[in-house]
Image 1 (cartoon, one colour):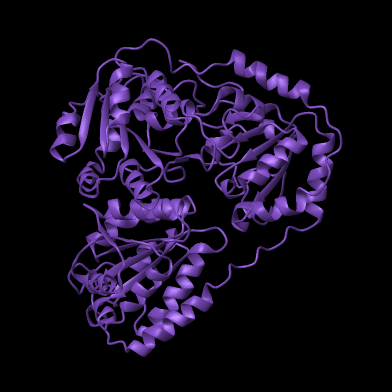
Image 2 (cartoon, one colour):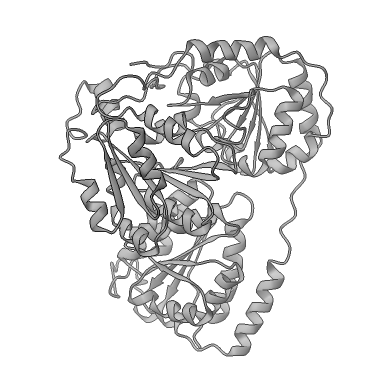
Length: 563
């Protein structure tokens, strides 16, 4: 038995799969995992493995686990590590490494071993912690400490870099049993939630009671407390806006849901944020994509921010934020028992309803080919009775999906790359979501540019027969970047008029059923949705189909650009 059996024991404890792309310096752990009964899912590239593990972490309890080899294996995975870091996903990453005798430790030596890279130094800024253990005892400590760190506080990725000789170090059965017992004790009970200081809920109560235009803003740190947040909104009669990662915390059709905000958010939601006089922010960092770069309108607002990451509070972009370092759950546990005074919000709520009626989205209507809003709205209605996960890549299609699907977390939720904004995210994350929760319908909405960054994972969808439904919106360009270039420079020299492949033929070559949609046809869409197994719908979209309105640099939230 090798020391890498400890890794198998850890993964088995969480009843998880290990997502892998193999290579020589990571090979020993695969044999120990197989012997221990850990399911190994081998993708077609390292990003496929990383993003499937991310989806596993989001969809099922516990961290996601991924393993790749040294050198190009580790460097190919770094984008996934960054995604997990910026979107707060608990990920445990195992990277192979050359044996300790071959590690180039001299500062002026580029490389000693084959496929050697300084993985710990490369990933340190985008992880919560990095280990390179040298003994089985150090490996056991790293596994426990790293996994706990990935899960605790604001979640995120950790990396354990595994020299080849360590993985193959001898391990006695008694040592493995001792580690298993230690593991069970280590994770026997969750870390206690730090309480919210009493003064903060009292201050929020006072401010909300006297505000004329209060607003609740929820972000990526809020979905776990969705039921409590709904109680808060309803008991205080508070309109709610969200960041993209907070979409669905309040159901889309809830009368208090005022939409999602920001760069490509709903214009009426941005107007509500612009006019609010008191803002309660839970699990969102008020970044530039939410507020724009014109901050004068925020100077006179009372702003209260609840965040699990003290660094976000210490480095706030706005000077007038009163923050508290605690989880959404801890704040709500302290705040919800406080009885709200009678508050008449009808004038403010009607104000927002009027904006919704007079500030429509403008990326719909008659277009050549398939209109994205018509197609996505139809699919939304056709699947409304199903428990659904919508996964997107990054681009125009991401904004259309967020605008035209309805959401109600956790029954219908959105998975997307928000902080890092990674094209190629959709397909492997959709596969990981379907693998982790086979009872959910998984809709993968992607664009022709984003889709081709990890198109090879179509092979895995057929291999595992994961019944994802891929909606491919093809405008033969990198649409949202093209739009930015045309607005800013009146030209898009490298982002448009691509000669795309026959996506239907490619899907079928991989063993995936596929349909073409040249103009909107409900019968074709129905056939696509009703087909068993992984299925692709290739929809041709007008080349310059816009995302409109949009918040551009220099604009205030009440003055979005319209096409």
